[in-house]
Length: 451
Image 1 (cartoon, rainbow, N blue to C red):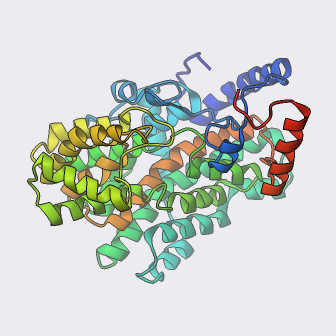
Image 2 (image 1 turned 45 degrees about the horizontal axis):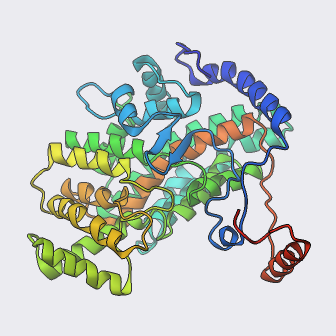
């Protein structure tokens, strides 16, 4: 997938790429099907399967030391190489989507084609609008988002094609169509949810066919600040994908393997993203920082912050620090920090975030129990959104969800193109594990001990 294609129609580009990649993967599997790629220990099984290599996920890979790479490119490289809107400084998410799907950096014309295509597909069926308008105000925004995506499945082109017995070789084409459709509709759905909950149900307005995906999203939300629009472009780009093992990506991969259409698979991913250990984390970080300000003020000394952190550690964890895979500062944190340094250096919450960056890692490192004492993406997201006026923390995960659709649906296209089967790992009970390990030890094979 190294040959650069200048066609602007993404589906036509895929038609050329898919057969080549199918051949490459088939040959690799045939030649290496019995090669072992790792060892599974009891601790891994009880520890959330962390460290087990058990998925093929093409669109991004997370390196413990350098962070996420989207099709081999770092965030900094994406910021430098992906096309930008006229007058904008951050990459367009449309370009990131093209990169994830094709493994190629798109031209400005190719990105323009994606923008135009999404604008054409953005209309929301009236039954979905009616449902959203009738949800109780107490229903969490993520529940509303998931429900709306699920109901959109009424128009699934893949579901209809499957019921019409389309050949397996064509699956990816209908997955592509559904993916393009749902991505196009997500900003409008999210904006309706936002305005219903926080803006007295005012209308979102119409899509401007001449503007990019993020600009239309920001405008429908009710924000016309150019810096906020650029922040949204950056946010939607960097939150899009984080390899396949995280809850939302793995969920969509698993559900999609049952040949559930992209709407059902994405809705399932959003339900996973809504958990406090996944997408709600940025909200919890901001709550923690807000409580810090309430207790010690917005101009605390380092000693006051240290004491607050120590008090936190007595009963909980420091929100936004550490990561299941990363062992260095999250580059998604770094690029948001650079955005803040450039645009809002005097923001009071940003100053506290910067102060925490100088204090917390050293404190956590000294404990000797934390594998990664460095900040992750969640530390900065809420602070930036707050600065530009989006103070409704319950909505932040919806933004995350809109972004994450780009990554998981890019992978779903390839999962069907490459014919990935139904995911069905083997599970064991504790009694079964005890018996298995005992038998292996008796036989002298060394099972249950680390190599």
